[in-house]
Length: 340
Image 1: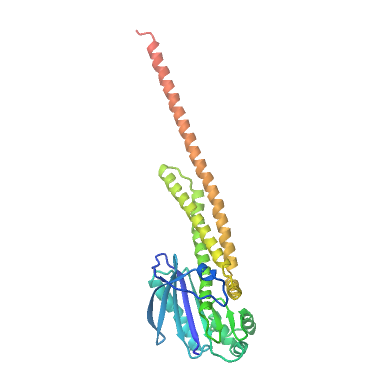
Image 2: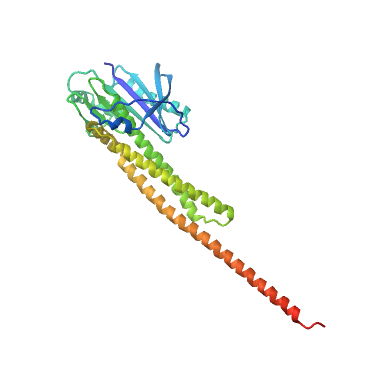
C-alpha cells in the first residue's frame, strides 16, 4: 500500500461554525461507553489547494465549542525522503492558512504530522533500524543531521500491540507502522491528545489574563460610585470565569479517565507524557487555586470598601445632626435674648 502523510492543525476559534457530527472508531477492544464519552468531531467543509505542485484536499472540522481542526492527507512515494519532509512543512503551513481564514488563532494552535506505513512484510523493528535517522528527522521536524544518542532516545518512545505493528511518538510527529492500514482510530487518538494539550493551553492563557485583572482590582480600590459599579461587574466576571474554568478542567479530566481499553489508554498515556500534559494540568490547577485566593481577597476588600463607605455616611450624617443642633441652639439664644 502507498505510504501516507497526515498533517493537521488545531486552533482556538471563538466563532466556530456548526456542522454535522462525525463517527469515531474505537481502537481494538474499547468498552461500549468509549465512543459516547469522547469529544465529537463535526464536519464544517473542505477545500482543495495546490501544494508543491499537487492538488491536496483539506478537511475542515471542529470540536465544540471553540476548537477548529484542519487536516490534510497525502500519498507519498517514499515516506523517508527529503521531498516528503518538505511536503510535511508545506501541508502544515497550508493548514494554518486555512485555519486563519476560518477564524483560527495562530498563537493558540497545535500542529502535528503522522507518517503512516502499511502493507509491509517483516518486522517493524527492521524498518526502524534501516531508516532511523530519517524517521527521527521527520518526528522532530528537524532538517539537520542528529546525534546517534538523540536518535536512540527518540525511537525509545514507542508502543506495540501486535507482533508486526509499532507506533513511535514525538513532540511534532509520530510514525505509525500498521500492516493492515487500520489507523483511523489511532489518528483520532492523536488528534484527541493534541486537543487536550490545546485546551490546557487555552485555559492557562485565560487564567493568566484573569489573574492579572484580579491583581489590578486588588491594587485599585473603588473610590466613586461608577468605579464601584465597575469593580462589582469585574468581580462577577471573575466568579463566572472561575466556575467555567473549573468545569472545563473537570471535563478534561473526565475525558482522559474514560479512555477505557488497554491499547488506547497506553497510547494516550505515551502521547500525553511526550506532550507533558501532567505539567500543564498542574500549572492550570495552581492558577485556579491562585484565582480562588485572589477572589477571597477581592471579596474581603470589596466588603471593607462598602463598610468604609457606610462608616463615612454615618460620620457625615452625625456631623449634619450636630450642625442642626448647633443651629437650633443659636436660634433659641436669639429668641430668648431681651429685645431692645
